[in-house]
Length: 213
Image 1 (cartoon, rainbow, N blue to C red):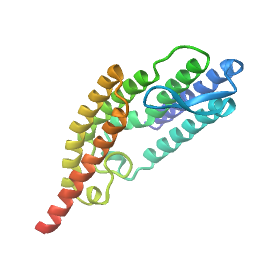
Image 2: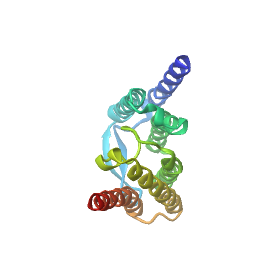
Image 3: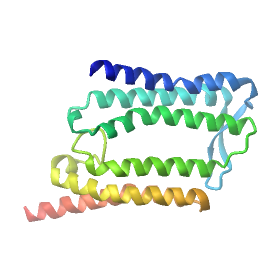
Image 4: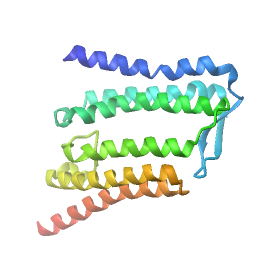
């Protein structure tokens, strides 16, 4: 089992180095200032020197990947994780880093990309995947709706994650739909709603439970 974990760690970490290889290959074709962020209309609104975009962003993603991996490996309630949740969390950053870097390089070298379309599509798929498995997520300190009252009350945790699962599934579908119709600020609104609603629901349950006790 330990060997399998080590192989997964090594492989997923190696994937995080693919963006560096891509950046090295295309480095001389990148402009001096590279677009690293786009507004709600798909227009670039933030730039970085190409050395930062080429190597700084992949380095940041690599650090996030390593932090996520070691955080999950040292989780006190690791046994409560489903294998799917663990794999999504451990491999997600590595795969996302490759996708984002390739999109950045292609756009910067003149390849026409609908950034809002691909961003909405990828984001929607990720939200649906997590929404599908949130109800199966048991109490832990690393993944899920981690609040003082969900950690202290298993019933609160379970009900909150059951509701959050449905909300995230619906939210993910809405994000994918918006990838095709591209309503400005819509994605931000959807993300805000799917994050805040489980929080409010959990807090209300906590307050009601406190009054009943």
